[in-house]
Length: 73
Image (cartoon, rainbow, N blue to C red; front, side):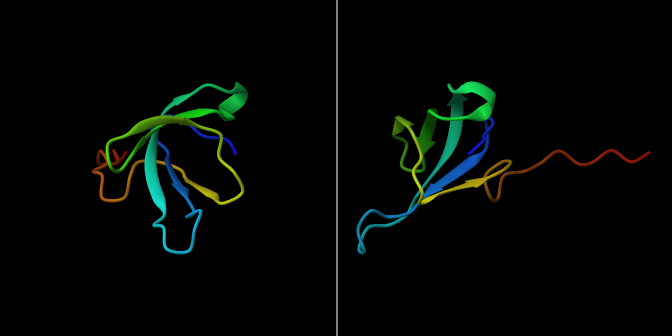
């Protein structure tokens, strides 16, 4: 997994009744975008993670985040 600051990460639930966890990568501590990552979770908690096989990386800003308009030319 290769990430950049601002990418979104989603972790699958560990148990059937648990929700998935979504967060934003604040810091990449591994080489070439590799883990570990400092993540701020949707609930406000910040933690250091080494994502496992249930992790999904969304490249780019969070869903619903505004992006600057593309410049034409």
